[in-house]
Length: 312
Ligand code: MLT
Image 1 (tube, protein in one colour):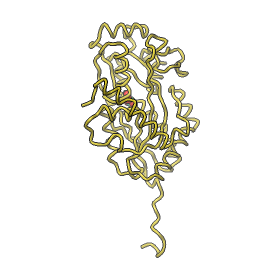
Image 2 (tube, helix red, strand yellow):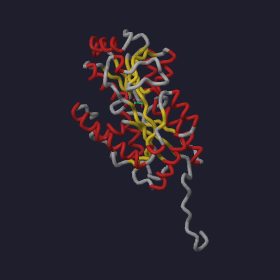
Image 3 (spheres, protein in one colour):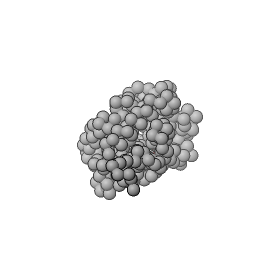
Image 4 (cartoon, helix red, strand yellow):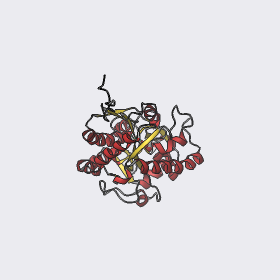
């Protein structure tokens, strides 16, 4: 028993390895961002930060795992814009997609690229649009399930082109990229963190980047606006979350550790090679990300309801 008068010391946090759930398959863009951040946070926190991939259902299976985990700061979620769209897309979830989490901070915003298998019969975006309109459902567009960023970008592309194609869902755009390189699927809209290397090597064909400005990591790739789809802009924000009810002191400690990671020079350099940049320090805070996340949910709700595209 403790000596009288000495309060039972609160075990320091973290007092054992931390698990960060990535709600998509290994090798995809969310996984890439998470592993780079986890490596620095582990050094800062003095405990291993283990990345676990739990894919499926557009990221909702992984999110559910964290919403239902003990709120002790040792199970976290690194997710993306799907946290903004899921509350409207999925009407029957086993967890609360809004109140099930404590936001820790925003991490990065990643541009997307419209890409195809390398022998797709289109020399540029205008040709690709024509082929989409001609071949319609005989074209296979890969994504990572309803609620994934690749799903959202695919929806925006089909409505911009006014043509519906067949979508093939994967547990992440890592495995989807393997089939695109293999030529068994035709098109994909995916994040530069997964596509930059494949575009540079010629393993896939790229038509556009989905930001208003060209991307420094892919300087020869036109923007969608330049290439014939004006106003086609989408980028994928990523955030770090703990389960609802996690102690504020732990959430703040995690946010400080995330901020350390986002200013670590090797991480910044690696993000730049992959076409993205970490968010500014003040955006990687619980309050800033809560506001940003809630605004994103409100932004997507009317768009999704108007489209009537629900997951269930
Ligand atoms: C992934 O990490 O596989 C992607 O984020 C999936 C997606 O959202 O398209």
